[in-house]
Image: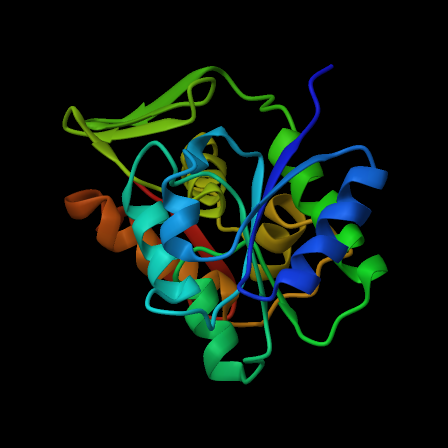
Length: 226
């Protein structure tokens, strides 16, 4: 079985060395980039996960994540932000960009390894639904992990893809926030209450006219209704 490939992007060389060493001890392949610009030249679509610092030279981690999530080839590469910027606004900004997790510095190596394992485990989880689901011009290929609207591919993050596939596979069912968190995020990952709302808002925008079919039932949750 092929090893997971992880890209560490941080301008602190000593931190990169520590992370790379410990990830390799755990059995991962780990590469290092000391800037966002360098990382974007390393074919990030090849990686299973990217550990990304926020505050770097000319291009910030937020800007790099925005570039990754806007490109269909890299949109579903999981991203974990590792940063000293740990305010709620910064965390929400990271989630808005489609981050899979957000670790505040200083952090322990054990914490990083646990978060990496958790994200990779979710990434590798097989789909159990039928291979293609859809509604009118909205179609999702669960094997290829692609989503199209009227024949045009839409760039969704992994979380957005899984939330939409959950609701589209169970049209008419209203899922509570707790149910969505349990199905899409692993139990050991702590997320903000606003996480679901942020992802739903992005989903509605990205799928255009079909966004109005994602309904809100106040006090209950969200669902997809025809």
